Image 1 (cartoon, rainbow, N blue to C red):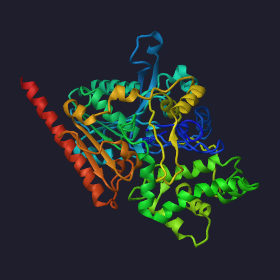
Image 2: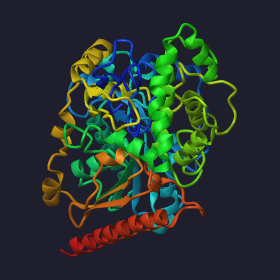
Image 3: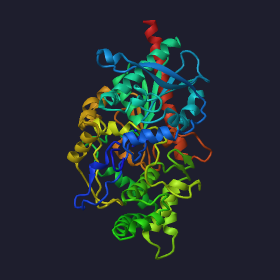
Image 4: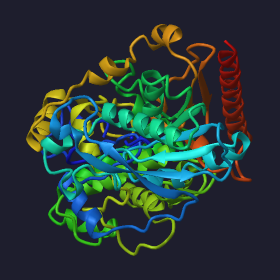
Length: 517
């Protein structure tokens, strides 16, 4: 679900849904750095080709998970009958059948913009609840991510290959895999529930709407399906990040807000970049201020997204409530300490909580989660306009669609379709539309998650339900249960389980009646 190129990931799913060129300071000089933007799950500041190169050069070990790995022979193009569209590629999926028996529910995670193991390892909720439902667990990897590469190492070669990367093809992939799996297991009557977080949550909700004959329910966590067009105020994402820090400490918010000018002023001095490199403990001296902006910017945004109430290792290893911990660092310096020293200390919590780094790679960070394809999605269908006001702790900026489009044209040879998502899936007047046409969807959001502002925050009907928590962060409900979980998180998960049980029981009752008719 990138800074100086085009954005990933939530975002998780992030997380990008908008490219750096969407954000152009209105009155800034030409030397002002282009600033990072984020997909619903995460982001990396490389071009597509650079990311793939770095990822291949530095493969990361896969986590050990209680799933078996399988590959499905997936068709390249579900929507045309051109001969080249019949090409097959191996689509990866993970299975756990420990608690399942024939006829019991099948819980399917609709994969995001990255390696499927990453999402499986951070979605312990499904493993926690599987025994209660005797559920089969399935995690399907999204095409063009992880190992599910339709053209192998050449999958990102050009628009000719990347043209098969979009959300509609991905949803069709999921549908085909699920139908085949049910058939092969001789369990056609099993109810299917789709789950997803961030971009995966968007896909889960859209899957329920597009394929109601395949999935009888969906749980979409932190799914910003309303972050398109003008449905959600464009400043909402950065307003939310800023509010998280302001709630933790007003001084912290003001230090961060003032640090950008201090950084810019220092970079303009003769030895400024060398001083910045020392202050930020760069492994290599920076050649411009841009990567430092990106480094700080990313730390704040992702820390706000993953402001979980317990220790976690989703984006990075972090303590419980890391926004508060960041602000304690900023507030804990003695009077007279520079803002840059303070914000470096705060960002170091995000990048080095485990105390394993002696210096920081401010440029050319590897894409450790396999997010290479999001640049393309951001330049085609996933256009989420954003801006920043003077109330943000980030420098104010406007939304420049023309410049964004030109950059997409330069990089990929294509132009964005900014209104395609709302044309394909809807979103405008969502309550009026889905009240009559949709059912059995849970939208869960935590208001400390910046993506929550683009989510469904109010019930649409008795069976399209919004569960909202004030302290929740990015799909926190999908994390494994812990003895340290606060009561509100335990209650949220219990509500989700109760609603799904009710819908599944209704499904079985309907099946009984239909067999008698």
